Each structure stands twice: as structure tokens, then as C-alpha cells.
Length: 534
Image (cartoon, rainbow, N blue to C red; front, side, top):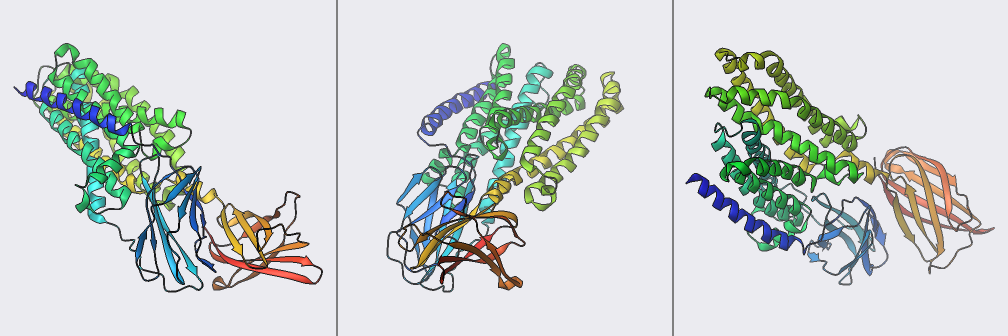
């Protein structure tokens, strides 16, 4: 009876997966990106309202929510926009009055994670900025984290457990109920996580989870493909338990591969470059986790019940675990190097600190596993009852550490990796300075404190060419006690002016001035604020 029920669940799951595949095929996949330029620039003071706004990212994106908050706090949805390569051009729907406005944006990236932010600009003169809530929605975030943990349990302990029962226990029943329960847990968590993804993408509260737009939005991100692959893997795991015994091993093996595919379909690590390396590495890492973690509960229960197949199960696991752990560790090391890049990021970023916690837990896990493998396994295989009991307790401790690692890994959902932060930091910052006498497009690369290069395009106030005799860049930061730094620019002959070997000592808001000599006794001065990243 139980087998028939599991078969029916698997059949229903297959129908759901096919429906989701059809729906997902009509949605667009998006790329991971960091904001590198805005027009107007953050903090700019404009003489009149712009006809349009633009947001330029390091890679193409697709907007989810665009909102303009007026000085009185009234939000205006911005629905008319165009995508031009890496830039989102947004139409301004109305003539804006004087004061400070907030342009709030939220876009989706390839790794399935929404990216959002805001910029301030003023018309005429600055005013008190309108209040824009940036409070963390803890109920929503907690639900997303819990859904991630439960999905890990379904994939690693459920599908991995089904593989262990088919290939290592070879038909043993110990732990079968636990494995089925873990898979069912994953079957609930996978679609639920899809709706939660939509909530996060649109910045909606948990109370909006039932709205269809949340689920469509979640399915339209790359995380939708992760959910589809996860559902297929979970279904194959169920079929390996409920189907004909001759088909158990093929179904279980396909399910184990499905775990790797699900993890490689989205996420920070799989979205990193080079894709030919990161996606296969994520696949191997996921398969290795499922192989190891999935076998623990069935093996522990088999030893605890002293079943006839416990010793062969332990023997097969002990022989296979060493190469599996080697692949798992190597894949994890490669991904860590790609994501973190520099050692200081382990301490200076939230992502790095979570990685340190995970590494600490792994040290305990590997130590415990080594003791089990080289101190207890041989005696347990020989039938020493007391050693088997010790091994069961040790396996239980391994399981607790594994679940703790799941919790830490789920926290990465909310932390951009140092790799992504470095991409953003390497991008230039720029500002457009416009006056009646002259204007300039100034770009500083990279846009953070330290050694930089400044590049300027000088024009007349009506966008015509300006034949400048000399150009001097002036940087000052009065709030930090930094008096004006003056650097003469050179003309390389391509229509631009450059200042090489420029050092900006500290991050923050700088006042940037450009002195333009247009004749022997005529100087035009223009200036604007510019934010330099740390």
C-alpha cells in the first residue's frame, strides 16, 4: 500500500514538473550584474527634471520594480522602460517639482537573486529626502532561509538517502521511512521556495505569498530551473524506493545527478565566471554532499538495529567515501577561491564570515569522519557490538553538524560573494556636469579609493565641441579636512582629457571641479559631487 501511495505521488509530481517546464519556457533568464552608473548621478542637483532616468549595470538585467518617490513621500510606479544592452532607460512620467527625489529600483540577476537599491537627486535645490523604508523584512527572510534548509534536507538527505539504500544498502530497509519523509519535505519546500523567491524579487511581504504574480515572478528567475530540477530529482528518488527493485539503482543514480543539476542551475557559485568551470564544480560538490550526507541516517539506523545487511552496508560506504570526500573537498576549495578571491574577504565580508563558520564546522565533521573511518569501522564490521554503538552515536553527531552546515549555507542566500563585490568595486564612477557655459562627462576608474585614472569629455553647454586650452581637475573633501587637490589633465588626442596616476585617499562624497581654460584670459569652472566607494 505504501509503495502504491509513493508511486502515485511520483506520478503526480511528474505532471506538475511538466506543467512548470512549459510555464518556465516562456520566461526569460537574466544575468548577474552590479550597478556601475546612473543618470542622474546619486546626489546630483539638476536645474530641471530629466526626461528619462538610466541605470547601467555590469551585465544585462531585467527590472522587477521601479519607483520614484517624490519629496512629499508619494511613490510613483515607473512602468515605461527600455533595455539597451546593459542599460535600463526609464521614462519620467511627469514634470517634477523642486526638492529631493528618490529613484528606487529592483532587478533580477542570473543567479536568481534580486538586486535593489536607490539613488537621490534634487530638482532646483535639495530638500529633506523623503522617507524610504529599508528595514529588513525578517518574517520573509526567515521563511526564505527555512525553505532553503528544508530543500537541502530533501535533496541531500532524501535523494542522497535513496541512492544509499539502492547502491550501498542494496535493498536494505533501515532508514527508508526517514528518507521518504525527507523527500516529502523537499517536495513541499521546492515549490514553496519558488513563491518565496517571487516575494523577495518584488520586495513583497510574506502575506502576499498567495498572489499568482509572486509565483510567476519566482518561476521567471533562474531559480525556477533549480526548482524544476529539484522536483525531478526528488521524484526519481521516490521512484527508486517505490518502483520495481530492478529499476531502483538507475532511478536513484539519476536522482543523485539531478541534485547536482539543481544546484548548478542557479546560485552565486554557478553564476560565477568561468562558467565552464563553476557549473560542473557546483554539480560535483552537490553530488558529493548528497552521497555522504544521504548515507548517514540509513547507515546509522542499520547499525543500531544490528540488521544482517549492516556490515556490508558499512563496508561499501567506507570504501566509497574517501574518493567522494576528495571530490567534494576539491570542488569546495575551487568554489571558495573563485568566490572569495582574497584572504581579507574572509573577515571583511558577511559572505566570508559565513564561509569561516562553515569551514569550522567542516573541520569537526572531517575529524569525526576520520575517527569513524580509521578507528571504529574495522571493529564495527567485525561485529563488535560496543564499537557499533559508539559508531552510531558518532554518526548522529555527524548528522547534527551536517544540518548546521545546511543552515549556514542557506545564509549565503542574503550575502553577495566578495567576487561580486569586487566586480562592482572595479567599475568606474561617473558624473555628468552641465552648466550654461560648459559641461563634462567625468569618469573615474576604478571607482574606489586608491590609485585611479580620471577621464573627461569636455563640451559646450549645448553639447557642441569645446576647444579647451587647458583642463584642470580639482578634488576636495571639506568634511574630512582635505583641501583642493589640483591635477592638470592631458589631451591624448582622442577628444578626451585624462589625469593618470591620481590618488584618491579616502572614500566618501567628494566635490569634483573642472577648470576649463577656453582663452588666455577666460576660465570656465564647473563642479558637482561624486561618491567614491571604499
